[in-house]
Image 1 (cartoon, rainbow, N blue to C red):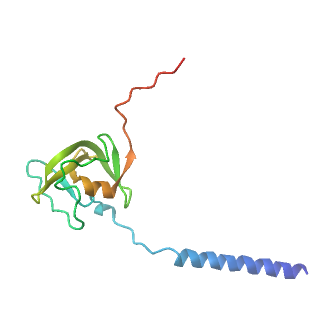
Image 2: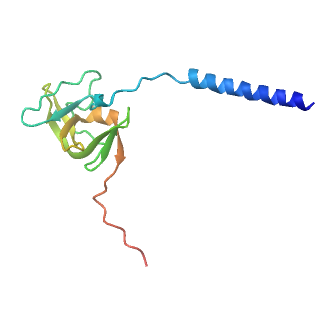
Image 3: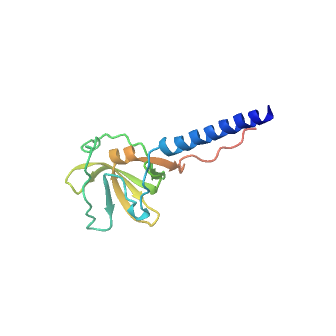
Length: 149
């Protein structure tokens, strides 16, 4: 009887191993890793390198913020942002602009973000809010709480 039990336990273990291997290989989509050199800013970004900061215009979805004068900004100055797609750090929000003139001739609200290498990039507000998330919040407005007695 003991050899029958060992055969059953062995068969079950081998079956589970085959099942796990099949799910691991077939269950998730095969992704090719992106090269590190291909890291880029999200759509709607304009890198400001000086007086002639020309960057290609964003293609794709139409921005809901362009032309708006009363845009409610989601991010604040001091927030550290990263891309939602791959988690790469974009930088720290330096300032919010109610009206920025973009290279394509349109104007609208924008975020100015400083990257780790101290370059500033201007992002369309709607495009950045759709493609970035807050990594860290720098809270400058609140003084430290005093302990109650």
